[in-house]
Amino acid sequence: MGNDCFSKIPKECRGFGETCFDERLRVAKSFIEKFVERIAPPKGQLDNSNEAWTQSVRGRFIDICPSDCEPRPKNRCSSKGEFLLDYIWEEKDNGKRILLASESEWGEDRYGNVHWDMVEDDFEKLLVLKAPFKVLIFSSNFKMNDPEGSEKGDFSIGFAKDKLKVSLNNYEHHLPGEVYIFIDFPQTKEEDSPGIYRSFLWLSKNYGKAEVGFEEAGNNLLFRP
Image 1 (cartoon, rainbow, N blue to C red):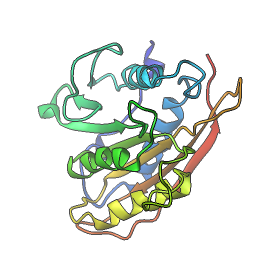
Image 2: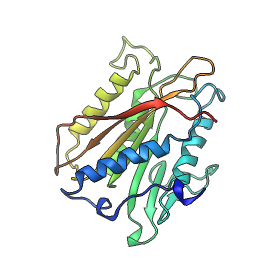
Image 3: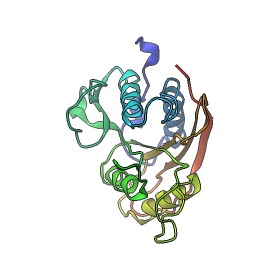
């Protein structure tokens, strides 16, 4: 892939602090646009497992990693266990600080049952790890198990946002300048659907606890290979 595929993270957006908020949001939106340029069709059109999705997501993080950073993992077909999180960009210099950290979780167990708890557990890893850009990738529009026997209900985008907001509101150690990027690839049952993505953001402007309000960052058709 050529240099035109690389993402850019300006130096002023690589640390924390009460500066460059508009520029950080611009970088986050640019990341979303570049990330979804080439991604697998919706799950179910490739095979009945999550593996094709996972490889597609992993490959995209590798392809668009900034040229002065190293992606982890480095190989889209890697069978090695994760390093801290599913995907990381770390600087080659500057003490190898982490600039972007990501978790992807489809919320589906080996039996095809869907649980929000699986997504929530991975998201809470992002909360405690410090990086200027954090990305959560998930898939909404599932029917969850036993909707009346628990608080789970349908795994809609509204449900996901409500649960994510609770986690963010309850966390007490935010840093100003941290940007949370959420990308949802809704499940579809339509044959030959090109698929869509939905995305939204939250940027922390203060230290400690915060009242969270999401900013919509766009939704559109996915690239179809």
